Length: 127
Image (cartoon, rainbow, N blue to C red; front, side, top):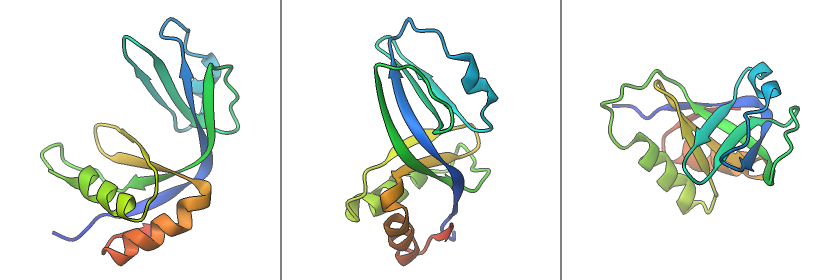
C-alpha cells in the first residue's frame, strides 16, 4: 500500500490546558477546526491562534499536518509510522484523531524539517 499524503492546514494553533471543571469557551465553536479532550484530570483544547482562551497553560505556534483520508479504523500503524519518522528527525509532535483521520501538530519552526523527513520516507506532503 502506498504511504499517505499529509496536508498542512493554513492556520497556526495553540494547545490549551484548563481545569477539568472549566466550561468550554464558546468562542472555540466558531473555529473551522478545533479539538477538545477531557479526562478526570484536565480539559485540553486545540484552537487556531486567532482565538484567545484564558487558560492555566497554553503553548502556541503549532502547525497541523492532516493525514488525508478518510482512513479506515481497521488500518494499523499509520500514526506509529508517521510518529517514528518525526521522532527520528527529532521533531516533537502532538497528535489528535477524528473518526476519519489523524492530525499531527508540529511547531511552526519545524514544519519544513518535518515535511522533508516525511518526504524522504516516501510520504507526500502538501504545504
